[in-house]
Image (spheres, rainbow, N blue to C red):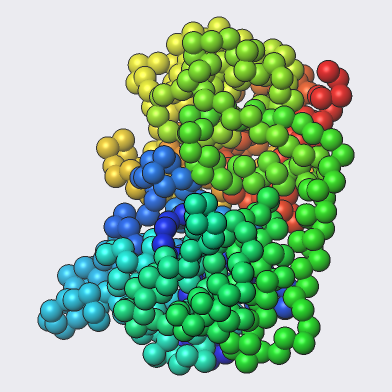
Length: 546
């Protein structure tokens, strides 16, 4: 049963995909928080995958992981970074999960012999997801993935139409994000695509209450009036969503256009006091007046689609904000370093990051980047697979174990990194096999880690025990710890039982750290992750030595 005071805002998209519904949803939430409201954000994805865990980063971008181990769409990262509200398994649903639940219920006879149909059985399951597992939230914002008109999105539109019918229109608001293209030959913005998109939405029984119109330029008043008239929306609820230079400007820009005030008016909430967005203004002021600039190289295999590294990109920016420095990111395809000298690409950077990834392609290039960072005393951060490659690089090039590798690629190698078959999770033993399903079979979510006294990471975190989010199948083999120590690398963070290496570092290096987890997933503009704050500071110090 939902709290009778909780209000629901549904965000849909039209005209084209990739307009930024996730960013819009997160920004609406931020402006409502600025008015003192408690918010929750949820994502409804129409694809048939159970989750994005098995999707190629080139197709879907980054897989975001929550504390409870849910693999979710990257928009949940926007939600967490903008609102500071930790997402859970109750905030991400896909058609795959919906059908999985419906079929399980049918197999157990829970439908009492009924013929299972999209309406009401699938739509009821979607509705249950929307309104369940809530507490005292003032607003729940639900983003519907895809674009209005997509065949796979129809059950979701029907479900949110029913939610409005069930709860009453005084508790529901429909926000539609569209594009107003500028036609140079005509010299004007065109409203017709938005009109068609709204007509399509109305065919499903949904009348939008607000239009968020993405545009390269301000929308003339006569165009706003035309949109209001033909889309049956109040003129003050036609909001210009201009392109901005930095995503952290979006809450400020939307609020200045009157978006949060329009939301409040829709729900009969007083707008006498404006939204307090002073913390966002401080972020922007810092970004606009940096004290200097450093360059960070990210050596990865998915650099052709930077959405694959969305959280990493933002975490690096957060580290720059904390140090009042602008950070220029140099994206380097790791495959290029396999055939050309690493120095040709890395001799002008102040720090190097090797992020996570799956598969053998580009692996040697990552090792070459790590070797360059080690030998040239350049600050280095290895994340997940990047940490594993840092360990292998030390074993091969310092400890002279030439066949050191991961069993992921070579079953007959010296198994420095191997498949993890069992581990503890909340007091229970998790077990995996080599030939098991790929989806959801990794060490996922938040796990504790104990830091070694007098280590660099202990100094950075300022505490002896931390909790970080994981997403990986393979683990560094603890039996090689003594050999690593002789090679100048220590394991400075371990699981509480001491069986799993979580962090490695090189004490004689100015800043060289590898972590098995993904620190970028917990970084926020107002609470930057300490590893990225420290890395950027090390990069600044490195730049002053040049």
